[in-house]
Image 1 (cartoon, one colour):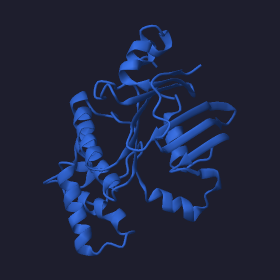
Image 2: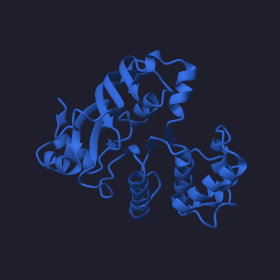
Image 3: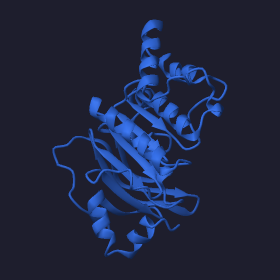
Image 4: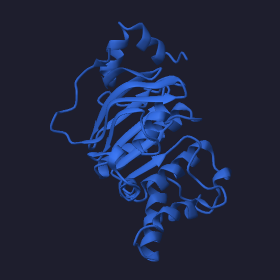
Length: 256
């Protein structure tokens, strides 16, 4: 049974919608009947221990894999009926940072930022202005000509976000919010994302193990464990629910 609290308004148009999604990896059921929706302009943090199925879910949302059963809808379109051309159009509306990183070590930070712009109709001057704006917004001034391997983990994450946001996506998918980062760095990243969200109608779906300290009480949180959704609601509602639910409390305390 999924604990749910304070569902989003019915009128809110979902950017992401999963309906009874199952996914098998070999003979193992990696996702077991997961249903979720993320409304436009909302923030959802999907937390759970390693192996819970968080990265599998993000790959399904990005159209990189197909579910064994169930429906995945992106911007209202059922991905099972979208052809390759349609999928490319949908992906232009989103930005993603996946585990393992999205930067090319052979390019500088600036060259990495310019790369996704080359698929647009922008001229060179417009591309340069967009890259400069991304550098400023993500606090990368002075790092433009460095290669990713020369950056700290926090700087590298900001560069990955700059690349993911440079085309002004409607949806940002961030797999592994706190990977390799300490709490101050996570709070810095979250602060930057909130500014971006306020400046545009950006929908954010992020995954993490247990990090809640950097999440606002009003942000939505979903808890996934062993492929099953245990809770969906606001952060303050999750903390209240965990007080009387051993499984939730175990996950929030960081146990595998």
